Length: 199
Image 1 (cartoon, rainbow, N blue to C red):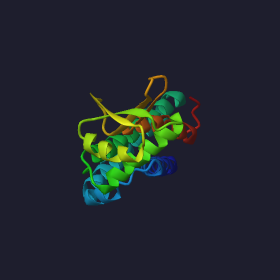
Image 2: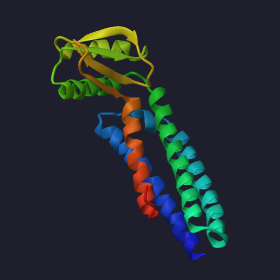
Image 3: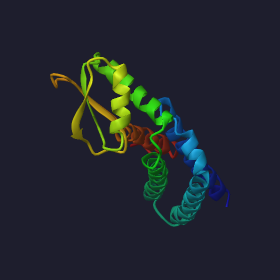
Image 4: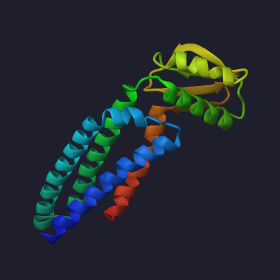
């Protein structure tokens, strides 16, 4: 029973840390969706409780497998269960972002993404691509970036921007989708290290 308690605690810590890491990294990137998340806290808490419940059920199954079988196979199943839980956290966060209002906080986010992108390319003379929902917010922010222009081409993304230099030689994807994808390997690596499994 002691290993069950330790396993549950480890899963709880990883889930808590994964959720905090996602939210922290989004905030560091200039994403200030606190108000929207606060407005839907009941939904998030319900999803989080479900994730914990599913994780505990999976941990019980894995514990039985460890007792009766292969340690490596059980670890792999643990990682898959935890990765599924982390993916649910990502999905919940993405749904919140997708459904968020394009308000002042979101306008600040777009401005931050444009600043970061133009700094990386080293120029404000860029063509900017975004989705239909963000088009007006991006157009409004471009007044702060001399020489920039909004492309009439619409891209498929949750939010954010892709930019390219006017001659098209340099490009940078600073969509929310791309930022989230860059976080996933870090979360997976941390989970693997918690269970002593090398990727």
